Image (cartoon, rainbow, N blue to C red; front, side, top):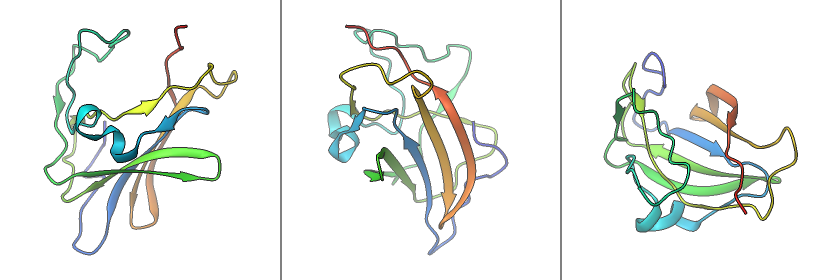
Length: 136
């Protein structure tokens, strides 16, 4: 949940959210393309461990949100760029594609990390967002 008009949009200033992937996971070009990227959550009955909370209401991302992938050193991420502000007090849901790691990441590293930025300034940082264990 973003708080307090936290990701404002100003003409000429880029507002983004980065989702850093756990070690060994790889982003898919175009965030997974039309088959895997969506600016909203779509429940899929055939996906094991589909654990979105049922007691929360989720909003779609604003129209015009753009998704891309990148890396910094050994860290891979997907990045959402927003055409408009995200509203205060809402839960936003989206989906993107990635390739699972061949093995579970080492103990203590099996986490996502979320950052929101305006320009080059980090506004919010959420570390150690729980990942899932791979089923082999």
